Image (cartoon, rainbow, N blue to C red):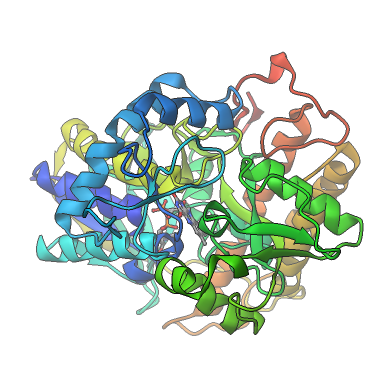
Length: 517
Ligand SMILES: Cc1cc2nc3c(=O)[nH]c(=O)nc-3n(C[C@H](O)[C@H](O)[C@H](O)COP(=O)(O)OP(=O)(O)OC[C@H]3O[C@@H](n4cnc5c(N)ncnc54)[C@H](O)[C@@H]3O)c2cc1C
């Protein structure tokens, strides 16, 4: 008998908690639908916040103040304090285990400015910060022989008497459905911004699968209407150009070559200013030409490569055409200070969880920090709480899906993305939201007419994409209903028909299967 901890997801959050649960003496198994090194964490460019003050004076207090201001009264002050106080130690731990942070002339960890902050606070590894962190955590897990099962898709969480007992997993390689039992399950499956389909910086995998699975067994979700739009994605591909480009002094220009906003305001404000320009038929560009080739090659090499590859322009000589797209989801599975959900034995961490840190608007650099800080905490806590069991894997019957679909779900998926971008986007109002709700409920009613075209057992990507689509559709309804309910504007949730913050909405939007509670 052992304490068996099942972690779903192998991004920064999943791997951090795998390491700490292993250290706490548990038998740890990580399940991931992709290879760990492909998890979205590898896309993070800008950095991870910690108030070292290596470039300019900084303090934990300023980090807390900036985070709370950006959260627009929806963050829990105690949680924010905990996060910010842990930041320096956490980055030092990452440094110690081998993350190759960029350095100052005197060998301190280099730091840069991101939007909404009072000091250069984001510690970075060129513009590959997430990738270096993820690869280091993965190396560390391999060196500890932690079991990582790749190409396994979470289908369902399994409960007995309101207590988690395991999860049903589709083995993508064999097509078999496996039931893995566990003393505790930690969801670390990332966010849901891919509901916006191609109008998102996110990896294709960010379809909110873990959030949907938790919701189906009765977990509470909160603040699902808060979706952050990043101001500077490449116009044609939605690939992110990091905020560090603006932090280093990049300008935002319209077609007339005029600057129209303070580039370092929080993301919601900059995104709305760009949106306004675009609605006035202006093109918008990021201009980093004046930063010079040497600086761009040293500090922003990935941005240059991405702009060349996806937009066919070289930022050293050319303006970068940009637009805001969905980037980060503040809402998620509602958890307490121990990352515990309302279901016994079920925990959530990383972008899939709402730890009440980011509130209505996340500060750049705080997400990577959250993954590692709470990842390491929940690993320990889940082990402390877990019961000892004998580990088992059972093979179950195949899941049944419609193999003769009349409606092509790929078309609906595209429609859903466009609908969300236009109606549940940077700005929304009652009409746009009601229209979106009607359409989404219509898609849901037609789900039985949708299904898969490929019934092969092994590596059936069509099946995975269909399952992911059903998850986004489930969450779509929750997001829209939450956005309709919140009759105010706050941070990333901007209602044209209610443009001010309202005190009665200075609280989380909590949703269960029974609706908003
Ligand atoms: C382009 C970009 C740049 C960013 N830059 C920064 C930055 O500079 N600083 C910062 O703080 N934040 C940044 N962010 C945000 C940050 O990177 C993410 O919030 C964070 O990496 C999410 O980590 P995670 O571990 O929660 O999830 P992810 O890294 O998304 O990992 C999710 C894991 O869950 C697995 N999974 C998902 N569904 C299933 C399923 N059904 N079954 C099994 N496994 C599943 C996936 O395979 C994956 O391993 C950026 C985000 C993007 C998109």
